[in-house]
Length: 377
Image (cartoon, rainbow, N blue to C red):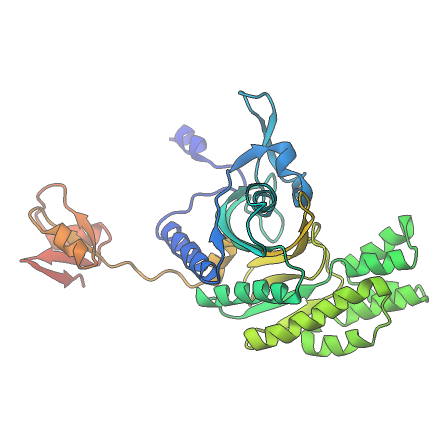
């Protein structure tokens, strides 16, 4: 027995999804995709495994330390299991759909596998569902993706939703404009990651004061934007500020009930983003529901913006699924007719002495007796 249990153990970060959660996840993913495709996004399905060089090209470079590698016995080339679907969608857009009209709207879902989890998401395998809008630099594209992500989350029943905006290119632009490099830059970035405004302000120079101001203005977007507008940012950072204001104005019209916050110095998890980025959270739920933002498709240098939702986080944010109505059908019952009526049937494989007791034992909610369906007390 102990040997059997040991053989059934799964690696850390991997787990079985059992009934009813597996079915619930499938329903949620399909509802999310239905919301996305209703806005003109067309589904694509990339493979689970690709050659390593292709998977790590462009935006995939951020996954270098997260992918499982294996040797293709046919070609003797190194392959890798995807840790994120966005690099694959970028490849499809740049190569397979290079001549498709722009802007290109693509939707997807699939499992990803990572070498290690993290504190907020210890799971190493989970399902992603998302969309990418490729070929437009308009702030309207950013607003469409953010609003679509929020509408999709709300549509599947998420409550307490918030969208946190970030500008991961803002701090690098500020540091480069003031010629801060090397150890001095690393020190500032460490203080920013810790949100230690006192250390930043203690520098006593313009950069320190500005970075401290950026840390302190994090919070609800309405109050933050008033302060953000007054900051004397370098010219290289002005496009980021202008895009932020334009997108926020559009989001207020599209998803006015969704609270918006901003953390202008957040950069962790946005390694390949090239502009305005965002994260979706739900009150009381561990980890983010999804994240996205601006990037460039390396193979074509096209501007793009997208979002990825994580099914494990979505499930944690939703109430347990309602009990499925299942009817037990003894031998001789018309299970086919019941299925035509919309029932889920569990057919007996042989005669039973007590159909009601057998239905209850098998987890059914109803039983077919005397040509009629009755509920089990």
